[in-house]
Length: 171
Image 1 (cartoon, rainbow, N blue to C red):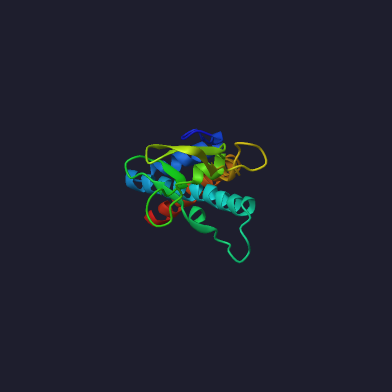
Image 2 (tube, one colour; image 1 turned 90 degrees about the vertical axis):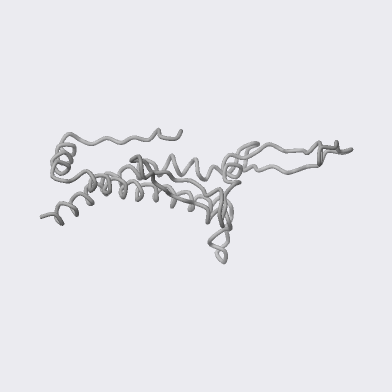
């Protein structure tokens, strides 16, 4: 799935209930309710990604939390737009700069130069594969595909809960 390609639908009855609830709430409260719901929805994908990573990359029971990649999962939301992202930290303490390599895999790589000078014999730099050539563990790609619909359903339910909480607080 490409970035921003997820969508979800409301039934006619749900949509009318949502419109009625939104009519009574200020813009600030609406925005906060939707942003909180988006954050919770993206957490489903992160949980699925962590579960896939642990199961597919043989993380042992002693070492449940498998290194920097496992710790680099992040969710964030924008302050200016109503949008949330799930992915990996690429800077800071626990970085996941190599997440795309583990997820999608690489071909066998050979270094032909070192410090700008040609090598007499190419140096092997490794590859990431799982079962098929140039196919990684697909832990994140599969998590987005499997957890996406669940995240959207969770988003819908959380929006309702947030709106009910706000309306009960207002009255």
